[in-house]
Image (cartoon, rainbow, N blue to C red; front, top):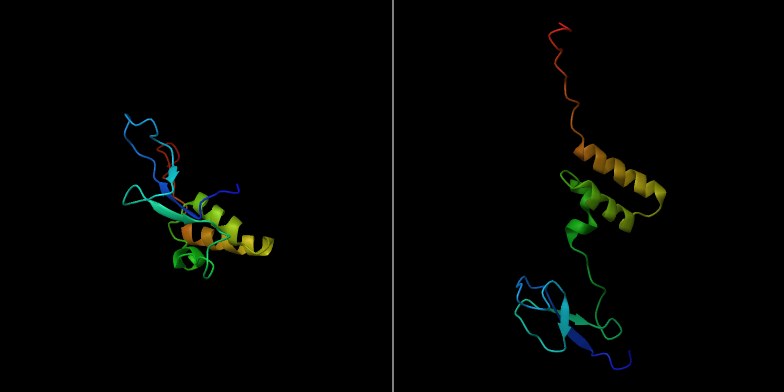
Length: 110
């Protein structure tokens, strides 16, 4: 697209059923709402690469309570080879294991 704007503003989906654009992410060359997100074309962005938040860079220090699907997406994205995948999955599993439940014997088994 040769005439793409240098920056745009992304608008979050609305929840107004009367609005025909409701549910769609829209964009505009001008900021429309206070919660619009500025988007600058990558070929024009200056400065360092974006930095991921600490919790995303180092989740292994606290895998406890992290949903398995979230953990898998993180591991899939950040693991450096299969050995790293295995290590990270084992860390997640160890942090989220619960002891086996004891089954009480039935009246017939007593």
